Image 1 (cartoon, helix red, strand yellow):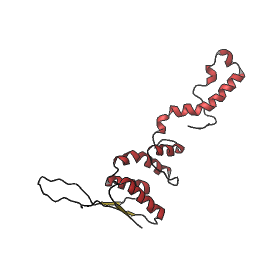
Image 2 (tube, rainbow, N blue to C red):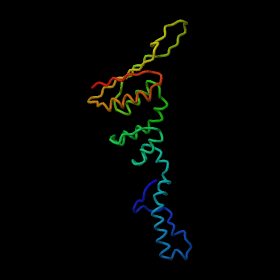
Image 3 (cartoon, rainbow, N blue to C red):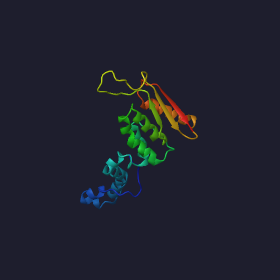
Image 4 (tube, rainbow, N blue to C red):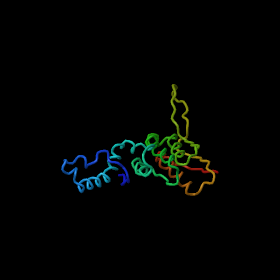
Length: 178
């Protein structure tokens, strides 16, 4: 909920809705004006409620709460544009979760670096029976990221991102080079 904002006008002042006898009463008008000050931010929020659910338009202090709705962890040190992009892309990323494109997209969104993702398994089809199958018999995923000056925390974050976006049964290895 939005907080008290000095000078924010109420679109429908309560004092004007009182019976005529109370519209002339100074105490009743001051009481209603106080209530107008308290409810004006609520009315303003409700008037533009759809903007609060758009990560590109939502107020900055609401973005973290919106990120929690789509289970995205944001880093406060990131620029606001990057945080908005990550929250806005979360649903699309969940749709690609478990795929090479999903792993690649998640790493790019979190690090800003395009990784190389090597997947051992594949599917193929052929019009001829007995055709060779591409890929390896054991699943394996290798993710290579070129990140200059990578810290151990960044390496762990990339490993966590890969672990969360790959299929659970596939072992993985992350190679971070600089």
